[in-house]
Structures are given as C-alpha cells and as structure tokens.
Image 1: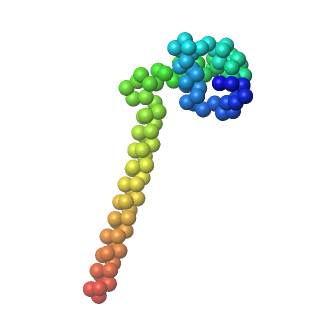
Image 2: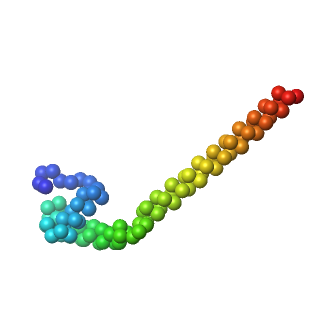
Image 3: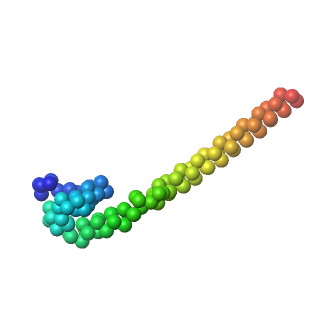
Length: 103
C-alpha cells in the first residue's frame, strides 16, 4: 500500500490479514508499522489479541458460538411465550364469543 492512500479504519478483517502475513513470514511487525504509520506496540497488540482469540477457534464449542446459541435460545423462548399467550387469549376470546352467542 502506498502512503498516498493510507488506511483510515483498521477493520478486524484488515488486522487479521496483516497478522496472518506476519505469522506466515511475509512481513515483519516493524515493516507493517513503518508502512502504515503505526507503532510497533499497536501491531504487537493485534498479534497478542489474535493469539488469545486463536484458542477459541480450536474449541469444540467456541465461546462466541455458545453465546450466539444462548442468545438465539432466549429469543426463541420469548417468541414461544408470546405465541402461547396469543393462543390463550384467542381461545378465551372464542369462548366468550360462544357464550355470548348462546345467551
């Protein structure tokens, strides 16, 4: 990348790409820092973060997947509860209509 078009926002995808290049030996921390006007400690921080999060990818049920599953389960239970209340209300309403018609 040229200095004429500097990266203004470092997305997770961009950081991951740079870190992978460092892991693969395609570049060094110092080169990345110099090319993108970053400090070595910033790039080292990305590497540290990648190494901490890498363990999660090897787990049978990574933390983020478990959290997503639990969130989806909560939403499903809420939707089921709402549906149950709607059915209950409709049945009660129908009974009231039937009673009204029979009176």
